[in-house]
Length: 364
Image 1 (spheres, rainbow, N blue to C red):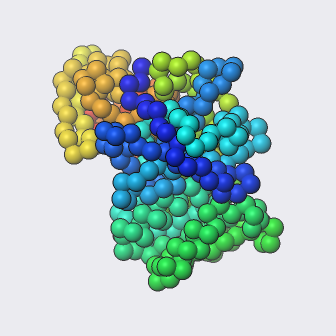
Image 2 (cartoon, helix red, strand yellow):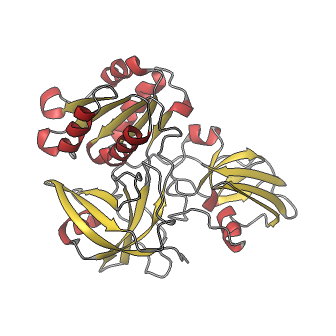
Image 3 (cartoon, rainbow, N blue to C red):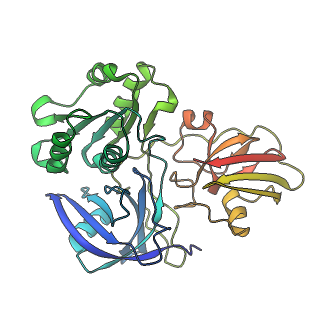
């Protein structure tokens, strides 16, 4: 059962476009540490449902963590999306909404790196957070490619214009409108990105947009460590613990669903006895010699009192991602990591059981 959810007060609601609202929350006194976040992360929100009790959805933060101010998520309606429509229709200033603390790994390792940012539609949400933060705290150049249906659907149009005007030497913005230019092709994306081959690339948006963009980056031989895409799927479990079962409806987040990938193959038989586990988390080192072979890593850490990050607990988001430093684990379920993530050593703590006698990991 989750013990770290919070009731946050809504202090502002802004209609960004006809179908996108920004919801700003006040951080409760004493909870500031829980809501420290990196640009590009998301909140998991509990949306009430008459049929299932609650629907859990992940929405990216569009605000910047600089200055320790309030939290803002931006929610765009989808045609058949229960949660996004409920939020846009019902959430008002003064309401309270239950959330889990920020999670996710869609964030630059260095705010001073040169960044090539691709956003499609509401995929601008985490990208704007990254842009705002990097302009404030970093020194690198930023190129933003932002694709939309038409001019009216451009979320944060005025804010993006302001940021570009205030940072002409660092921020370059390219708007792509389907109503004017048609849908971008893979070759067009490749031609555009070729001029910025040394930049760190981040991609967020609808599935077709992400697929063609990432494919273009691969063809340009952007190395895996400089190519990032935001991936979410619907949460099928209940991260809020004491609430009713989660509605398994279509994902409502600003990024598109990822394709399901196979879990990594078992590289050996399960250990016969307790496993040694070493974990680096937020600058702290945890060492245990009694990780039971059939116990998930996250469950073991929680039993030891470690406040390890998580959201869905079902292998359907990246909130609990760790990187293997030594040893191997087997994932019981994985809907979010692709083959390159797995090859890079990224695993999901909520679904990881040990394969070797020693496992060392660090949280990403």
